[in-house]
Length: 420
Image (tube, rainbow, N blue to C red):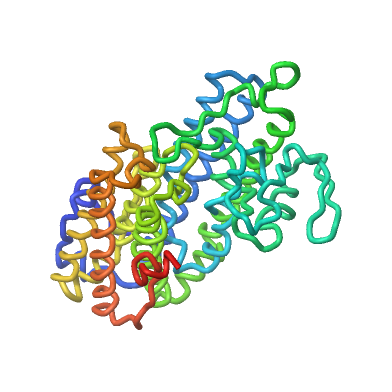
């Protein structure tokens, strides 16, 4: 593989004509697969660290062990969000993704919720509270949930009755169990679950603390298992790697499909514009922890890095090689330069959202009615993502790939439909 310096990749410096000519589709998709393996390995390693922090919390509940588990969850989101660019162009990833990153969720399926805050009126399981319900009926059969296991979560509860909001597994189920509901609306503050929700015996504050601990442990164990599976799919001989490397042209299509669909319909549309239009904090991606600014930023970083063929690992090392940028630069240097500039602009705009949140203006406050500062920050990021999608389409054309329909969103394509 061609190795780029970290500085050259970060600054988006155009590659020399010699390097651009040296790349071919087979090299490019090989880099893409190698980076996927590195990202999923980092995601697995951080999930294992989270698993350990959860075990420590359960063994000795305290304010410090709860905060350590929360910090481990936040750290685990950093590499995982950078994998999301692999979703839409790779059916194997898209089919699997619902296990680990589904949202929004009817959290009342899992645990007790405040008042009538269950999300869906059409979901009979929205207030099941399996933590407090060791036996229940589902689709006409009796379910014994007296022992909470990964199999119960994955095979029985997750998307039960075919309802996507019945999210029983993955990062957001764990997030809810660590933070609890964010009942602040568009005001300041995240979820504030007390550590005593995990104290067994007399000090248990939320009831059923032993079952809550069992659920959290099962969900954490399952996340590790799911990431082990996906890492294997991208390692040598894995199904996902083989799917993109066996036919390099199809691999290029997968790459640009993931970039364009995440950039436009998913991130700019469903994750950002929709919540801004509805002023609804329930549309916030990491809504319990107020971490949405980071999730969006690392999604944007993943899109950019997929084009540049480079990834900075959690240990600071870099995986890089022949890239889409090389191919596009060889075919049309102007398209390449424009796309690199627009990718840098979108990362900067998402970085501004991140910086504002870290300075005290949380994402759910940004989408509040009348918050002009938040509206501008998010509007600028949405516009930058939409703009770069146009140049991704130009890259598709100059590479001679067949036209690709990127994922759309009513919030961008038919705004009036959002309010019907």
